Length: 109
Image 1 (cartoon, rainbow, N blue to C red):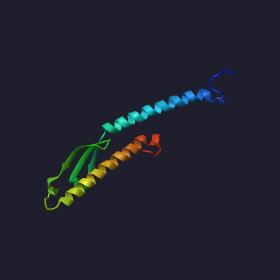
Image 2 (spheres, rainbow, N blue to C red):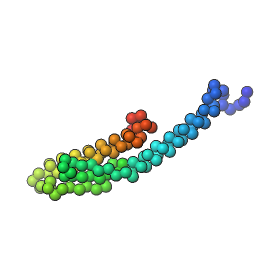
Image 3 (cartoon, rainbow, N blue to C red):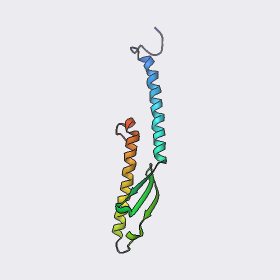
Image 4 (cartoon, one colour):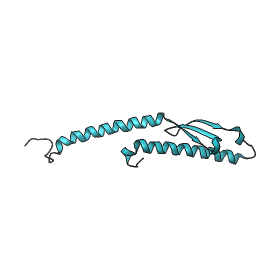
């Protein structure tokens, strides 16, 4: 009997395949995460009064605000439009992340 790995019912040869598959999956996940980080997402409020551009890391890149909703006497409307646009953008990032990484994470991310 050889020293080293005990007889695992023929699993010794399969362990190498499992490790290769795990490494391949790690590379695929890393590539998908990099793609997500570089992808730009646009969140919109009602009637596009506020538009927010962000990347897949949820970092804000740009915000555009329609001057029609800039009213010093009504800051709540502007706040609501920004919240709406931000939440829309975050939702788009999450959905794309689930679509691209869900097969690897089984909903853990």
